[in-house]
Length: 105
Image (cartoon, rainbow, N blue to C red; front, side, top):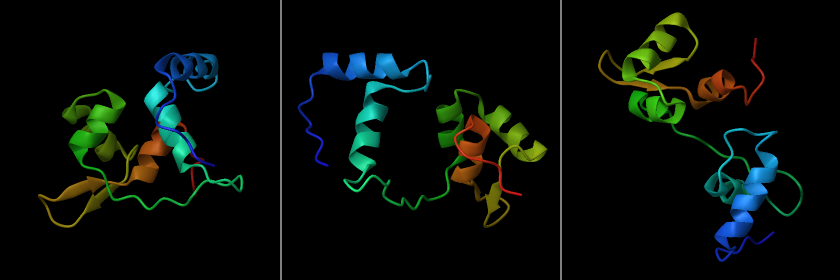
């Protein structure tokens, strides 16, 4: 499937507005990204993600850096540590916190 970059903003806003009762955090930009990531065979393309910084997670969740650290310490988010000062967050744990993925046990 080919997604044109020339979809009128009003159309994107209307489509996102109709879907927001089902996906409250959906924005027109997220909708375009999701459409572009979707392949023509009905399955989403596999995406390999790099670990996120604490700042990126805080911005995504709309919380402070301290709150993200609290989530890490409480086990709500999974910490990836390469060293004491190099900490990243597993993106899958962020999706789980947001309710996008089922919790693995």
